[in-house]
Amino acid sequence: MAHDIKLWAAELGFDQAGITDTDLAEHEPLLADWLAKGYHGEMDYMARHGMMRARPHELLPGTLRVISVRMNYLPEQAAIARVLGNPDLGYISRYALGRDYHKVLRQRLKKLADKIELRASDLVARPFVDSAPVLERPLAAKAGLGWTGKHSLLINRQQGSFFFLGELLVNLPLPVDQPVEEGCGKCVACITTCPTGAIVAPYVVDARRCISYLTIELDGSIPEDLRPLMGNRIYGCDDCQLICPWNRFADASQEPDFTARDNLHTPELLALFEWSEANFLKQTEGSPIRRIGHRRWLRNIAIALGNAPPSPAIVDALELKREHVDEMVLEHIDWALVRQRAKLAQVDRKTERLIRAVDKGMPKHAR
Image (tube, rainbow, N blue to C red; front, side):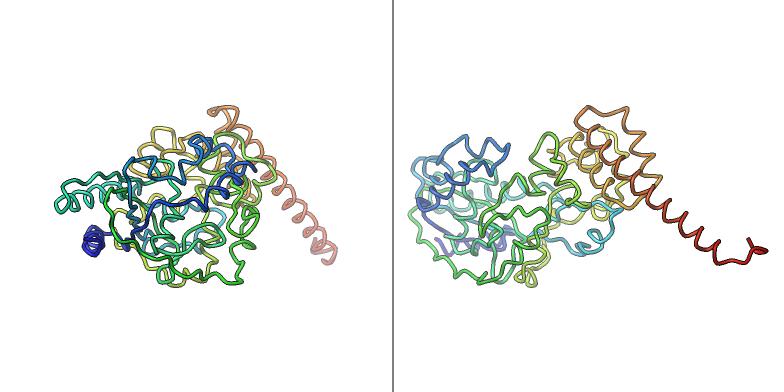
């Protein structure tokens, strides 16, 4: 049956499936320490359920095994360098360019459970896709889907790390798979390339400094010292994955639902900043981006506009938006205005110096 389960998972579009038991006892001290240091920031749900995250059998009594699956999400023509290299464009983490993965994976996991039930009528199963307190990466590592990289994400030797994870808890005593050998070695590229220094130690991320946390999870004001480091990243960040040597082997996703939407693929910041709340909801329908809401969307873009090259058009757009936002967003708009005006003033001073230098070098009759 374990063999057939993996075949059925492949038929349903998963790129790999593995099976493990529910024992994550060795991860409990690590989780407790991470929470005690406050690295979860305002993600209160991370601490709300205590050690249940490391005890899948408490989520579904009778659980004996976890079927862990992964699905690649990197879209064709990802245009990563093109967007990150152009500060007038907004960079959105590549996982969020298509349909909300929660729905896609959860529906497939339910179908996988239906197939298993045809063979095991006494099946008790429950699918999870970021929908309950589960340590999905340690479970996936135990199931042989990859190893935990120093950026804390799962890495697969053949496919890199651009994939989603999901779990199906079952009450069947299936044979388990073996973990794979760790492959990071002495490499610390992900640690040194993090724009905000969020990877404070190998395998340990301080979410309070992570751009993904700041742009997606944090509801209020983003610390001023981190804003310049965010560049044009307006939803998530992929830097630690982009630098990883194993992602040279990452395949593009074959799942149509993860095809990049035109309005999000290589978007201009000023165009995104013009979206009303109604337009934001329309443009992000069925997208994971919708969950951050229009306020955080404008906050994130305001920071990117403040980091963009000096532009009178940006100043005009920021000024125009001031009258239509709450205090939290206004704070970030005003911060961006200060930066833009300072850069424009610097350009003006350089222009004046250039004109004076040219004048000095010209004969009087030519001035």
